[in-house]
Structure formats: structure tokens, C-alpha cells
Image (cartoon, rainbow over all chains, first blue to last red; front, side, top):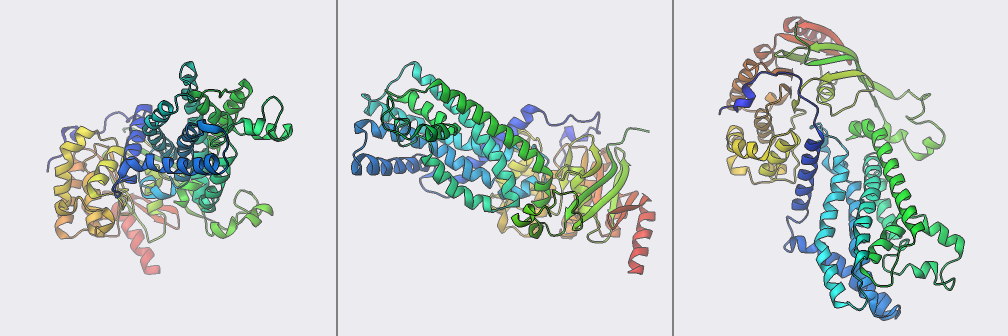
Amino acid sequence: MRLDEATATPPGPPAVAPTRSKTRDVLALLVRRDLAVKYQDSALGYLWSLLEPLGMALTYWFVFGVIYHSDGKGLPLHVVVGIFAWMWCQSAINESTRALSSQATLITTIKAPRAIFPLGRVVARFAEYLAGIPIIVVFAVIFARFAHTGWNLLWLPAAIGLQFIVLSGFALVLASVNVMYSDVERMMRVVTRIMFYTAPIVYPLTRITGVHGHGGLSPWAVRIYELNPFVGIFQMHHAAWEAGESVPASLVWKALIGSVLVLGIGWWTFHKLESTVLKEL
Amino acid sequence: MPDPIISARGLGIRFSKSRRKKSKLREYATGRNKLSPAYHGNDFWPLRDVTFDIFPGEAVGVIGRNGTGKSTLLKLIAGVLIPDEGTVVCHGRVAPLLELSAGFSGDLTGRDNVHLVGAMHGLSRAELRRKFDAIVEFAGVEEFIDMPVRHYSSGMKVRLGFAVLTQLPHPVMLVDEALAVGDKDFRKKCYETITRMLDEGRTLVFVSHSEADLTRFCKRGLFLDGGRLVVDGTLDEALVAYRGEEVEV
């Protein structure tokens, strides 16, 4: 066996620290591996990333649309738009929680920017969300009467951008704290379930805010509800596809500020805990 | 004299003896936890006040009994632990074979692991493709390369890890006990490879309990005891100190 020519050169000037593009390469690599491993032993493979949200959507449409007869015929589109975006949140949160503890062997032997491990999970689940967009388009075509496509589609990149920010923040906190307290993993299974109902994912926002002062929760409850950055984000998802959905400016601000705040807290926590995490792994 | 490639200054790292017990919520509430500076009773320092310089092309043997901070030192040099005191600077990338592991994950096949670990160390896909057969052949795991690594024997894992890491162009190589696991043939191949890498001017930091292995490569020795650097001199000086320690015990 011969070593490569490059290896024969004596160590010259100090090698530079891994650059930004190097970091991006490693991130891309982790994401590809993540996607490859997740479905490697299943017969339907990637189809699961579509079947799972579709099954969920069917359930909620049955409960709310058929059993409770709510909100007429636009509901299937509303539910599909909400659930596909939600699956990205839910799986990113649950999987990033284990991102450091499950990749301990890699993290404790190879020096790399540690944040890429939780962030990689957020990106990988985003890829699955992208794969589901054709399904949303199909529903928008079938329920064309309730869909609206025009400039409002610009809400989609806005929603995705904010969702990236807020999920990255969550991923950084959860992954690092979970190394110390595996309680986090159990807790998040309950918390994500609660989060699902605290944002307008399967129900319309007007159920909470009311229409022209009629219906909805009391004003102080609405104010608290709207502090959740996911409320604005999901409203943007709905506004991107559906007729009759809009995003009040105040919600945009609250979602933006809330998301950036979560990311800031996440970044700070991660760096604060990094040294302890490495000792624990 | 050239600039050092690795330099440690007052290096120290602190672990808690019983963190899990200590960090129950109840104790956070009463302030008796690791975040409170008043509470240091449970700390211990696997390594403290360690200062040394290693120059390009040196082969340094790290000697000491079990639990005296040898592996911790290598991890700090590799940058996979962050010191609590002092600094360690390494100019140049490091190929680390730590605790008999190159960082393979058990659920991936040997092939996937080689690609993942190689890529995380900065090898491009083309380089990996070019070197893949040589790596597998060197490790002697041709039949098992598509099997999950969790089914590998410890010898196979170390062989594959060593094979990947010696293909890296990095100027610094850290080897922790790896040669103890391989069989005779593999050890011979390792000796040849390490000798060649040293001839190329690379730097080796080598942890071993085998005097034969140490004297084969290293001229310089660091003897660690109780987390302190006791001897920094020639390998013989370090070995004498190590033997003396054993007699006392």
C-alpha cells in the first residue's frame, strides 16, 4: 500500500481551522447519512415521510370534518397544509433531542463544530417536508375552490425561514440538555403533543381569535396564545395555500421576534453546556 | 528551533465524581450543585497544570498507569474535550485513534463508516473512492465491509480505524493503545506504516503500555502520574520513572 502523494509532504505552515464551507460539507454529509439510515430497513422507504402525515391528516379530517361537521369542505386542504408543516416540527424536535447522545462515538473522536449534529436533524426533516410539497399541490388542485395561488405563495418561504430559525433554537437546547437529563426526551413527547394544539395547525385561527369580535377566546387568552411563534408560522403556511386565510402584521412580528429569541437562547445554552456535554458523552 | 506543533500551557480539566447524583433538581434548588462555586467537594482533576511543547516530526510516548490522564490528554489535543484551565493549541489537523475507536457507529456498515469518518476528517469523495480499496485491504476486512460494524470483532474495528486514519494527510497522529489489540501480522503492518509516516516528518503522540512499542518509535517520553506531568524528557527517563512507580506500588 502506498500513501498518497499529498501525505508525503512534510507538515508545512499551520493548517487553517475548518472553514465555513468545510462545515457545510460535513453538515450535508450528516444529512445525507441521516436520510439514508432512517429508511434503510423499511420496504416503503421514503414513502413513509408522505404516508405518515397523510394518515394523520386523514384522522383529523375524520374527527373534525366528519364527526364534528366543522368548517365545510375546505378542511382537507387546511389539514394537509398544517400537518405536513407540523411533521417537520415534530420530527425535528424529537430527533434533534437525541442528536448528540446517539452520535456520541463520532462526537467524542472527531473534532467538528458540534452544533451541526442537532442542526443536521432539522435540515434532514426539512428535506422530508420538501418531498411532501407535491402532495400539498395535489390537494390544492383537487380543492381548487378553497385554494388561492398568487403572491400569497410568498408566505411559504417566510414560514419556512422562520420555522428553520425556531427549530434550530429548539434543537440546540434540547440536544445539549438531553445529554445531562434524558428526561427531556420523554418530556418532549408530551410537549410536542401539546404544541400541536396550541397553534392553528388543524383548526382555523379564527376559532381562537373569533370573527369581528364574535366567538373565539377572551382577549387576554388570545394575547397569550399569540405569543407562541408557531402561531404566526402556521398561519403563514395556511395563507400561502388557502383562500380566505391571512396573516395579521402583528403575528408576523411576534413570530419573527419569538423565533430569533428561541434561536438566541438555543445558541447560548449550547455553547454554555458544550464542555460539560463533551465530558458526559 | 521551529515553532511547536502542539503546545499545552497549564492544561487542566475537571470532572465530577458523581454528577448524576449531584445534579438532582432538589440540589439545584438548594444551590448545592456544580454551578455553584461553593461546591467543589466532588471534583477531581484527571489532568492539571500540564505544560509542554511538541515539535513537528517528533514521536512522543505518553506513559503512566491506568487512570492517570493519558487518554484525557489525547482527547484534549484532539479537541474533543474542552479544557477547564489553560490551553492546548494544535497547529494542523489531527488524525486521532482514541480509545480504540476511529468514531465508527455500530449501525452503519464498514463501508459507510469509512466514508463518513473519512469525510468528517476532510477527505473528498474522489480521494475516498481512490483510497477505499487500499484501506479495506490494509484492514483485512474485505468479506465484512458491508456488514454493520457492531458485528465486528474489536480487532477488526481497530484495524479498519487505523487503516482510515493512516490515509489522512494530517500532520499530527494520536494513537491510544491501538496496537495492543491487533494480531502479530497487523502489528507488523502498523509498525511499517508508522515508521513511514514518521519518516515523512509527521508528528506522533503515542499512548502505550508496551515498552517495546514505545522504544521502537519514540525518543521523547511524557510520564503522567495522578494527572500531573512528572517527567518530560527522553523516553528512557520517562520509562525509568514509570518503572520506579511500579516498584513502589
